[in-house]
Length: 238
Image 1: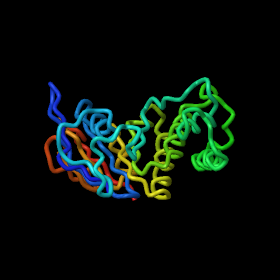
Image 2 (image 1 turned 90 degrees about the vertical axis):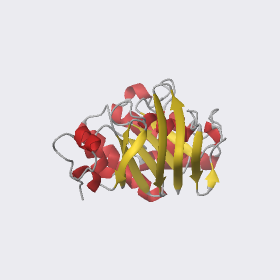
Image 3 (image 1 turned 45 degrees about the vertical axis):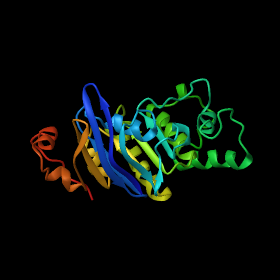
């Protein structure tokens, strides 16, 4: 269980304070306007932004004080940060060893993850030879091969066409269920949250103003969330 209790930071323009719990095998979608604090929350969890107070635990382990590399967390951004001079295999393998010195077991692990995300036949290609969706599959594979229990996704599919975006969200759902991951997904598309997430958290002015299951989008309680969604509420899909 990932637990945030008044995890806070102070910035000149805004005080940010978050409380949230997320269980293994679940996706929590973070929605809200630009500048609300969604990406900052992910940065705080990953150890890339300062934290002034509050609690942050994973299964009872205090994550405060751990460097980003030591945290049981991996992050995928909209810019997947692929290395364009490396092929797909190398781009995944670098998640296990910066020098690409993998054991035979790790090499098998790279091949297995590539197959799971549908790029097993692309391992010799370089990112410039791939579509945008294929590039994001490589980025996701590199996250999964690290076998960290917490996966943070900062709008990784937002630049893709809707059909491809939903295809990759379904892949994310499958991998979350299969591996028992704790996933926090930042998205500007409420329909994505309704489609894939177990829980939805609405971030507003540096705090989580509302959270709940998919019904949150069809029956928002606050005027801020109603304004964010517009006049038409989003219906959760079965």
